Amino acid sequence: MVGRTQFNEEVISKMTKKQLEKVYKGRKDRLEKALVIWDKHNPKKVVKEEE
Amino acid sequence: MSGCVCSQKELSLLGRGACTRLVRNTRKLAWMHKYDSTGAKNFIDFNDGSDALATIDSDFWDALLRHDDPTKRLYLTPLMENVAEAVTDEEIETMDSGRQFVTKDAYLTFEGFAPEKDASYELYREWKKNKCADLVFFNIDANGSIFGSSENWEALELFPIPISDGSFRVVRIPATPTEVAKIRVRFDWDETFNDAEIVGVFSDAQETTLLTLPAMIQTIGASAAAATTSLLTVSVRNNVIDNLEESWITGLLLANFVIKDEAGSPITPTAVTEISTGTYEIDGTYATGENVTVELDYPLHVMAALTIAIP
Image (cartoon, rainbow over all chains, first blue to last red; front, top):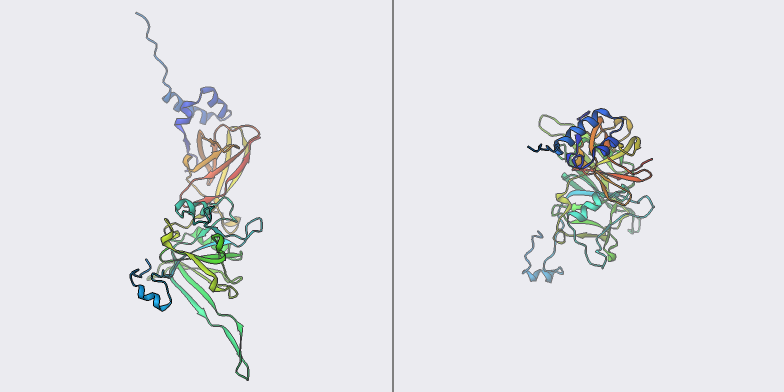
């Protein structure tokens, strides 16, 4: 379908954010979508505070 | 298969082998260009490298049907219906003394129909495009046996059979209330070809025959915009008559593109976007100064690898 982007989640999830920014330099829309995918596969670690 | 019972040894008394394999009616044709881009004659190499018949399986045929060089590729028709191969008699001049001289040899004419269900409009246009090309053919019978010329059969090279110059004609026959639309194919086998030289690889020597394989739609890939180290822009269209009738291949996905670097190692793209009909942006990481190749992996379609230089 024209206009639809199919992302490769497996590849994106293994890249660094810096690498993604390099691939999508100047293409903000696609970078944002790629970062959403990246975040989904790389959830931030929750650090428990010591009681 | 042959319709002959091997125990009927008495048949050999008739001067034939005990278990003769029969040639059946033609159901398909395979064709090639007579010469490849280097000027060498095309043929199918059945030699496994040690003067024995190669393993003729789907990989064997796939390598020919998807050959990267279109001038060396083997092309296949769909199943042909209502095939009629008629003999046109030789022309003879008879002298007053009664002596006869052949002024024109007998030859076979071919007529077959590809119903619309099996023959796409793209395939029809492909045939139309090639009607003036120097085409040569192989016959495939109802068993899947393939027949060609014995020009160098001692080396297990099966050469195609020539047809008369300019005799290849295709026409699209529209549907009627009682008949489906179909493509009619007609040509004359070359009258100068010695049909005593026809040899074949019978179906029982093949693990996969061309009878079971589909006709491919020929496509052309092109770089549609300057490549960068993170972006390839590729258009894919049918190989049709001319640019006025371009027919773009739409709906391709990530899995349909195979990207390789100069060393042949795969490069996995991060995304594919169809930016306009038949034109795709392929995001990824491509090395500066390299030539990357783009191949198409799409059922029923074949495309020569496209090389794109990364600046």
